[in-house]
Amino acid sequence: MKLLEVKGLKAFYRQTQALYGVDFELEEGSITTILGANGAGKTTTLRSISRMVRTEGEIKFDGQDITGLSTEKVAALGIAHVPEGRGTFVRQSVEENLHLGAYTRKNKNDVANDIDRVYAYFPRLMERRQQQAGTLSGGEQQMLAIGRALMLRPRLMLLDEPSFGLAPLIVQEIYEIMARIRDQEKASMLLVEQNANIALNLADQAYLLETGHVVMSGESEVLRNDENVRKVYLGY
Amino acid sequence: MDLFLQLTLAGLAIGSVYACVALAVVMIYQATDHFNFAQGEMAMFSTFVAWALYQVTGSIWLSFLIAVALSFIAGIIIERVIVKPVENAPIFNQIIVFIGLLMIFNNLAGWFWEHTTKTLPSLFPKHGIESTLISTHNLGVILFTLLILGVTFCFFKFTKVGLAMRAAAANPDSARLVGISVGWMLALGWGLASAIGAVGGVLVAPIVFLEPNMMSGVLLYGFAGALLGGVNSPGGAVAGGLMVGVLENWARQYVPGGSELGLTFALILIVGVLMFKPAGLFGRVIIKRV
Image (tube, rainbow over all chains, first blue to last red; front, side):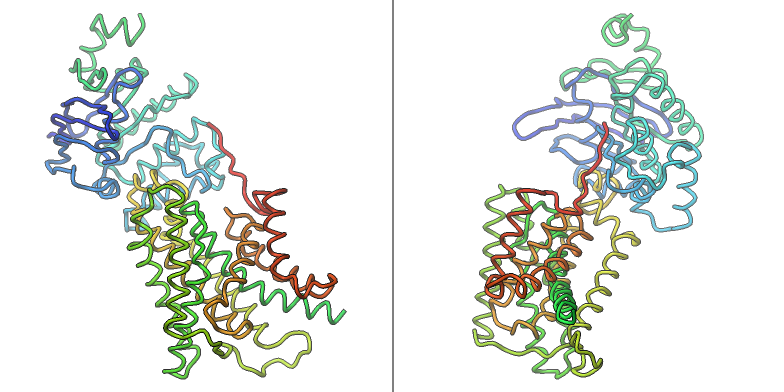
């Protein structure tokens, strides 16, 4: 079943157009990645879904058009956005950050259980649960951002460059945990990455974005074996 | 020694009022990065509302509670109707709006209730404690303020809405992404600030006389307290307010000619803090790693 369908998406920052009619879809329970260089429009695509930028075109989540909703209403539908820069609440504690992730949920017991579940995925966060989140390392803040998104019990996770600015070992650790999350939570993810190699390893479907246009799409395997993609984005 | 104690305790009492105003100012500042210059006049107006209700009901506590509740609602409405439309406007436009609010409330109060001074009775009984060190009103003011501040602290620290309000103020984009309606959190902040200001107004009215300009001095001391404690620290603002109250009382007594120089003292404090310790005494420096 199609969880997300995007058709003819155009996005604008004031007068500047960033997307020029982007189409893509995401199957429920699958991971789709959007690859591209700096400025290709990857972050803008995620921001369009979360209604943080002015758009034209169609965005359907679970069959429902969401272009008329506010950002907080989109979140309440079960779309958890891990933003560029991780969006940490720096002055709040780690645990308060997780509680904020569950803001739209009512059942306190479920929330408490889910906090334990997040700590099981990320034991390092448990060690730092009372610490001010701004003092965490970059990798820990990325873990916290993913944990915060999980607290929504999301139907769809939007992940904006989880590898950004992190050491290769940390990136590997985070991607291993994301794979576990996919297997155990049956979560659907829309993953934006510059690091094409690691994203193609995780994702089922891939789209390649260049200056606001989709220039290529297909199974991750297909893109990986494409000669152009290999040269330009994978570097071998 | 008795005189010193008396001065200190009276300073704590008036400082409690400054603390309320400082806290109200800091709450709005944290969410919007602006000082609400109208905070004092809004508190004055609330106090007049309490006075008007007192003329009708004859019960000061009932009037007080209704006035605080009305102030809460009015704060929300002011944010939604007047402040929200300019939230993305340049800073000067916003300041003009705050000053406009100040003048509107000042003039409305003069129009409704005239500029003659009124007396509002104390919330606390005249005779309760037999002490030469502190009056019952002042003792009541201190304890009651501590109670209000404690409740406010617990609200922000331990409730879901309180946490959401802090998150919305600190990082509005992320707050929206977890489903928090940032606009309503701001409005709620205005409501709370306005209610806390009303508490301060009713507490100070028996000391300074009720008239449309009664809060101008108090607001200045409140600003001084907020700056001294640190504009990004609610707890610091409260401590700052109390300290300003005590320091002011000492200065009035012990500095030659000090009795005439109260407001000057507040201004010197404001300028001094801004020059030498802009973050204030308790202002947190946010630690950030990237």
